[in-house]
Length: 241
Figure (spheres, rainbow, N blue to C red):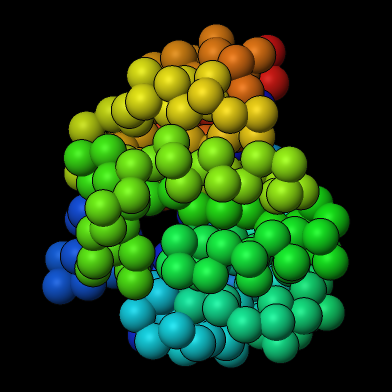
């Protein structure tokens, strides 16, 4: 199972939000590239990066910071936030991004996302962000009437690499990952699932790793790392047992 340390960007700074609320941001640093290097030194081979401003704007708003991260990090960078057209997708892949996460576009223009998944084989991840079981979009500012499982099933046999499932009600709050909901989603589709939202310590990593054979590909963690509640090297070792 892959452990993805997260770098969320707001105004060029490394932040974490509480429940996706831009007004509840905690700043953890002003040098995203240096943070990426620290994660690499701890053994991370994968990195999850989100342009939070871009999620709301629908276009890249932290391009300089993202480019610096890509240059600094020797492993695989997974990027999300406001990537909603073919030109943006191509541009990021050409710059060295390994996988692109698409959320709002997956709900509002699924045919486009499927087209990108076919064109960039193994490169597109669909974000399935949930608030009380319903899909949220536009930087989690809007909640749809589509159930998580229903959105996920639309992309079966579409060639997407993974589903990124986030329980928004837990994100950034250190409440513990919603392991059961993540496993339930993984069992309902034939697409690997990445868990996100609420990771607070090694117990979450352990519980998810035990379910890896159910289709759990990885887990994203942010605040627990920044606040010293989770040691990245130990988490990676546990995930690889």
